[in-house]
Amino acid sequence: MNVKVKIRRFNPEKDRRPRWSEFRVDAQPTDRVLDVLQVIKENQDGTLTFRRSCAHGVCGSDAMVINGRNRLACKVLVKDVGRSIVIEPLRGLPVIKDLTVDMEPFWRQYKSIKPFLINEDDPPYMERLQSPEARARFDDTTKCILCAACTTSCPSFWADASYVGPAAIVQAHRWIFDDRDQGAQVRLAILADGNGVWKCRTIYNCTEACPRDIEITRAIREVTRAIVTGEVS
Amino acid sequence: MSKLARVTLPSALRYRGGWPYVSWLLHRISGIGIVFFVGMHVVAAFFLYAVQGVAGDIANALTTFYESTPMQVFILFAVLYHAMHGLRLVILDMFPRLWEYNREAMWVQWALFLPMFLLPAALMIMEVTI
Image 1 (cartoon, rainbow over the protein chains, first blue to last red):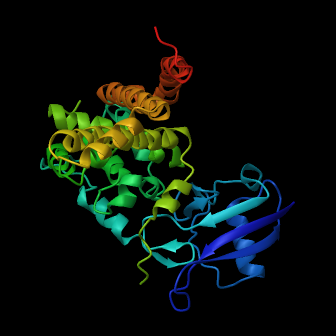
Image 2 (image 1 turned 30 degrees about the vertical axis):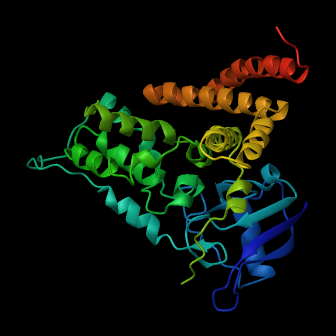
Image 3 (image 1 turned 180 degrees about the vertical axis):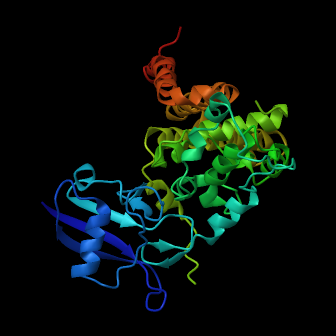
């Protein structure tokens, strides 16, 4: 099938404002949007810039706005988006070039919630054991691949980049409810700040955008509840 | 490094977040509508009682505007929608595990909202007095 692809471009060395480029590509319905971008780059315009790494929905490099909605280009098939595809960079993060955004603000928010095990006890001889039930408590939020699709779909983040964002709260959730970790209260204090969970307006865009189907709004509200009650259970 | 990070209102409105996003947008629009409505009341009262002379005409014009049928129907929509959407969020926020059923909760919200809004709105438009 012949597909029309419209891409929002921006080259900081040439362009004063973003512009649109249109391409025509022959693609199979089962091709992924990432394949289409690759064909354009290889055969039509070598200057087209986008991120890709694993290309199998694991690394989270190729999150972009496809037909108006945040998705991973490597997980969306052409047959699911139709013959006319509009591709834009993620909203709310500075554009470096074309579809590549500067992820640095996103990583800063991620680092702010201390995304590592905090445990002052002496390490055991072997691994720290955990029951299947305790592991299941935070299983959903371990699926996050840090693609930024959730954070950049959030109107609260669009309005105020100092908001820690859904992805960082999901990562905090992953550690707060891990019974091997002892830093829950530290993270809850960070997220109780004005730029933490209180800026979530329960818009639900994050949950809709997540390519890993994480129940993000639920995770944010579980963290909120832990802040209010002071209990992590 | 480019600084193209600002998300404009048209760009934000173009985002296809689906029904939950539309639902939230309506919540915001209805909230702003309520603020305007109450604001007009306050301004009309101010002109009517606190300012003398020509201000009375302004008060009357404002009162005629917000007491008109379209405005009354709009405010009925705004107050009812804002309240029911807010209640859904409060309930789901109190029991986070229910967020899994957000879509179903939205259908329940609309199923309750539509008859509660449409019936009185129809009576208002037909100017039926009981």
